[in-house]
Length: 119
Image (tube, rainbow, N blue to C red; front, side):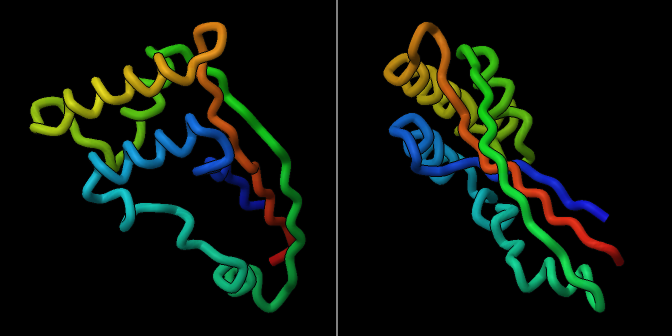
């Protein structure tokens, strides 16, 4: 069995730190839905009575503003159209992308974690 997910780095670059702050500012559900609540102990319980191994790989996505907007809006914890914080959130995202873009894109950096073992 393999469990795989991308864990977005939250402060490894100024862009990612600003993006993290954007989520904390505009998403009231961000903290409760944050997948970082999964730790090694919970993964060990999943693989019991067996054991598991872990491999991590660096991964990145490059987005222009429209791609970053799509990435943001694909998260279940962000405000939806019609909510009062929706447009201010998008306006702030645009400002963040403008101030941190290089050659028209921003980089989302991830640690891709693979937990694998036999059940």
